[in-house]
Length: 139
Image (cartoon, rainbow, N blue to C red):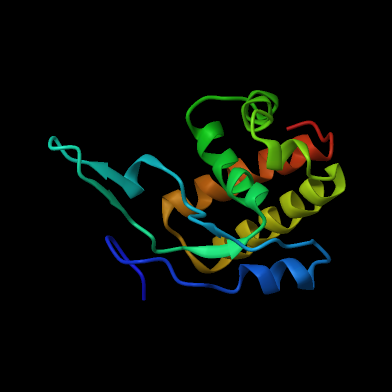
């Protein structure tokens, strides 16, 4: 199992994309970009926790980043403006991002039924907030 300091391995995200009718291009994805997974030491050595590494479309990395941007205080439109600086996000069909947001939110709802960690609930709420924005629902 990958962990801090180990090389990435392939995981089943590509198959999940195919199951939900989303196209998948094979890029290495971290899928959990947040301040706790990157450690930069005083001597400029960088350690990266690759626990959730996967393969998939590059825009998926940005979708996984959105909840962390929301947690940092950005609104969904602000987070998407930031992701719109990256070509893979801009080139993605809107329907694919909408579908990913829906599946991501459903996964979060499922996770909160079996896990009681506070961060799981917070993350699920943030993803749901983004999904509501994608589908123009009032929070």
